[in-house]
Image (cartoon, rainbow, N blue to C red; front, side):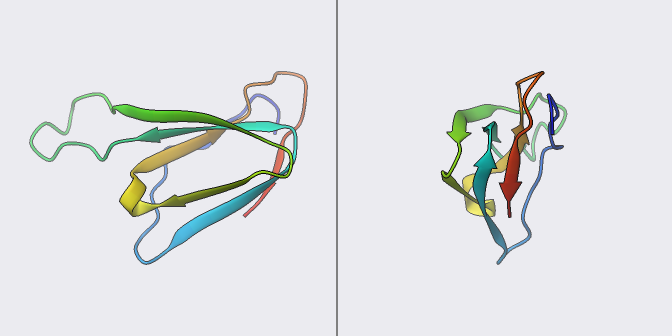
Length: 81
């Protein structure tokens, strides 16, 4: 994917997700779970991390929500889930 991103995702327990970066760089943005008392508030970013070729990522519901993006407008990024 070139300069694309996923939607914000969750993984229904007990599911979780590991990904290996095969090509390029992908950026993971993690978010806190939305407030049940103020659901219309903007989502709160808790962490942003860039992953490069051969690195492995991990995500689970207990860590919050996330999206993955390729910020590079010229290079493809490929990951294996």
